[in-house]
Length: 268
Image 1 (cartoon, rainbow, N blue to C red):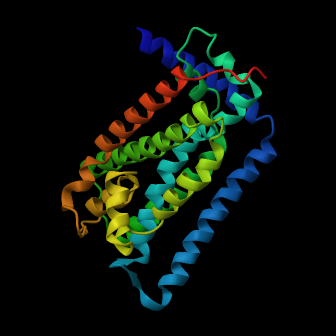
Image 2: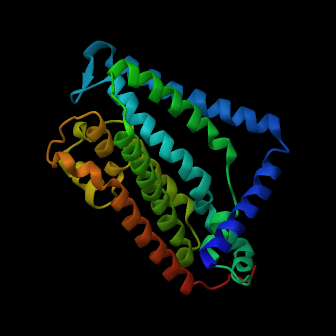
């Protein structure tokens, strides 16, 4: 009953935010075009890199594109749901975060539902196009099980990346700073997902598997779908991506709520 009310409330808040964003349609369209152009530029960089050597760590161009598309797809959903968490410090410093504490709903839920970035559809357009193209190039035999696994893996990737954004934002409860940590932690971690983990030193591979589990965002699931080996890890590790995502996000949520319990208004 309570969950149903929260879901209904979430969609009402989201619909209001979407209507507000669509008032500026030119800016909305240009953001989508800008995102597609940026991701296409990265794909072209990969092609140039592999033009001479054909493979990187045993991965060819189309396999790397598949890897990249999974990361972009999950990041698109993550932006929609959690990207504004990186600016939590702004609300705390301005004193506007207090309004989330005086309303009769969960503060975390309220803050999450505050924004819904529809311009992230640029990620979806790019990812879907790449999936279709690469599936033909690699002769991937899609079936219901693979589609279900891809969906679950993307969900896991959303929770992992969203969880890290939530965890970073929680720092603001103690330091009143959070966005700077995004560029120090989140931005480098996301860049690691552009390429297969096998090209990185072993210590980084283990770090992205068991500390900040970004290997489960796209690399491990991609190895399952493409039936590729994972040096230093069992080949079935990709199947744990949804579970890792749930556990990591739960940990992030608990840290955020703990930080909230220590929150003191700036009085601005």
